Length: 179
Image (cartoon, rainbow, N blue to C red; front, side):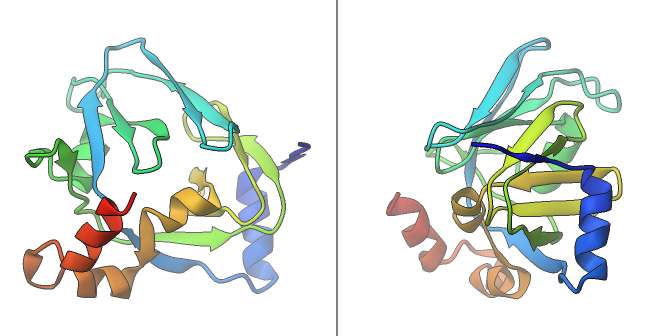
């Protein structure tokens, strides 16, 4: 599979200039996670065998704690800095070993071609047509494949309704248990 090499900042800017809409999404899926060992490499591989990217566990300079290795419902693993993980997830895991998302919305845009670019952690990232680019800022853009995005994110307003009253709704539990 051939991926078009892009400068992701320019790519997103051009998409927006041409009418693409950055929409708000929130993560709804619970994840398994554990703190890694500094120097530990994680290869993010999709169910279909595509190697999306790789990264290495580092010590978070602000907390002096190791990064977290997160496993999403579809099994793909990736690294999240300690400070970011604590901001986006309830660190106390539930009885099943899952951590619940608590972060605010992200802005994302869907892509219509296979692209490859330099991820914020300094490694190449491959995202297939239909996947999403999450745009946290000009220098903080990363990708999520279509199936993995749909299994972990929903429009922000929909997630807010799912979690009304601070409880994990039955519909979310149903989504998690059918996997």
